Image (spheres, rainbow, N blue to C red):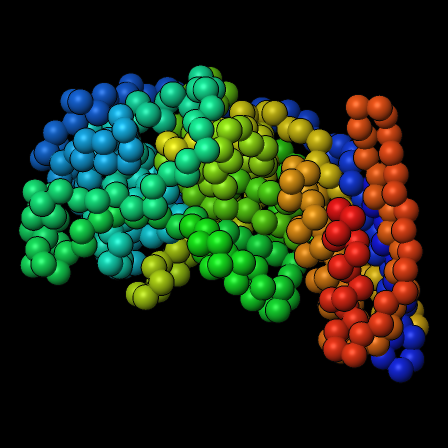
Amino acid sequence: MQAFRARLGKRHVAVLSIVALLGGALATGPAKAALADCPEVMPVAEVTKGMVGTGYSVSEGTEPEPFTAEVLGVLENGIGPGRDLIVVDTSSPAIEEAGGIWYGMSGSPVYVNGEFIGALAYGLTWGPSTIAGLTPAEDMLKIADRPAAMGADAPPAKVELSKTMKSRIARATGTSESASSSSMKRLLTPVSISGIGDRAMDELSETIDREKLPLVLFKGSSGSAAPAPSDVAPAAGGNFAAALSYGDVTYAGVGTISYVCEGKVLAFGHPFNYLPEGSTTAGANHAEAITIVNDSLGGSFKLANITGGIGTVDQDRFAGIRAIMGDFRPTIPVTSHIEADGGLTQRDGASDIVTSEYVPYLAWLHALSNIDFTRDEIDGGSSTASWTISGTSASGPWELTRSNIFTSDYDVNYESLFEMQTHL
């Protein structure tokens, strides 16, 4: 449990109170969605040039739409040692309208004669194109059995193409071989984030650029970990969201479900955050696609709302992420009460963070946004702040309470939170 209180003012003192609660469980029950059938898997060794398959993804709403995928070849060890990459040329009205595959198609399953061959996860580095790289299905299914830790090396950012493959891609796209890309890169993951202002959005974007994270941000609506209705079941080709937080500040990566079997969901076809040990904790949710945003320079991406909960993402691997259906774990609630202008304006806010590693940043982001929107001005002033952080360790419950006075000639909203973030 954490509490933060502050009095803010320019010349006249404005009152700010923030309370952030760290610890506790979100009251949710098990999902009762019907399980999808487990499709047969085609070994990558049997995938050959010229095969024509059908893939599924969502461009609007929640209903998967088919697209055609013609196999151009297989790059042996293309992703890494023992990890091949299947290269396909895709087509559909939605892909044509978007100018090629889009961010958010990651995980879209492709079938040949009813057998699952792989999930869309890579695209050409030079720009939007119909050419895609599939993570083989048999690599993805290994995640379902909780494979051993992967080690500390991150997945390759690019996959180099052979001369033969470059020639095939040039023919498929109607370009000269010299103009075609020499490599493929992992598709970016669209990240929906709600409840933050423009300056917080800019700072988060700068962090992503600085750290070279494979993400593309968009402002979305708030979401909840509450289970989806029992008649809404995860299905291959449907939308999928991996959430780090809910409520006011909802932060979730959007992609596509690749495979559903025996209460387990595989998605993305590549990592989300990628922790070296491979295990993770994130919320697993449905999503509803609003549209595909066409961006000829940065790459088109899926704009989506985060909807009902499925369970928990517990694996983040080279070949994709895994969620356990119906496994709803406690979240870390962060609440805030803001008062400004002598109490004339005030607001209660609440966010739920899924795992403790993200508490320092997301709780700070929650508090800053709530201050900005409630106070409705960004300038110098003074504040009196107090906060309480509580949790549980091996020796039992603990609590830290702190109060302080802050002043700033530039931005008291921002500077009132540094000490709290340090403690977190």
